Image (cartoon, rainbow, N blue to C red):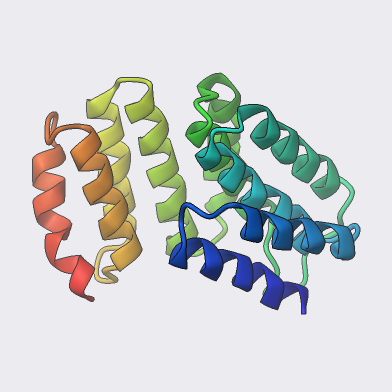
Length: 192
């Protein structure tokens, strides 16, 4: 049931991206009912991302630290559960969104290290989070390198979410420092 609630919060956010109260309330319930579990820690990280998007920097940081605190007390996840690699990636993403780059960078490095044992989807996502951090910090060329690495990990497996991420960041970079070629490369992926 908690996994279903987690999905419901994500679906609500995707359907109504500016409406934060409902998904945050759902995620708070997952955290409360989940107790000491991977799903509760994941809910904290997803809530941190929503808080960051809403502009609640302090709330995002508090949720990331709470999720990390909880994760330190957990045993190995069961197959199909989120892992420490996912939590590090989601937490880093929230901090990048909140503009807390000095807090995000060590977590991004940890996420990249932990994601090496995961599939290409998470490894690509981590590279895109690194790209976003570099772009937020003003380094368009480094951001393009991370995006290029993400695309390399997904070679032969085009993903619409990755294409949207690259195109969004290409717009932020104004197509400069290699971003125009990256945008051209993924333009057709959105249809897949």
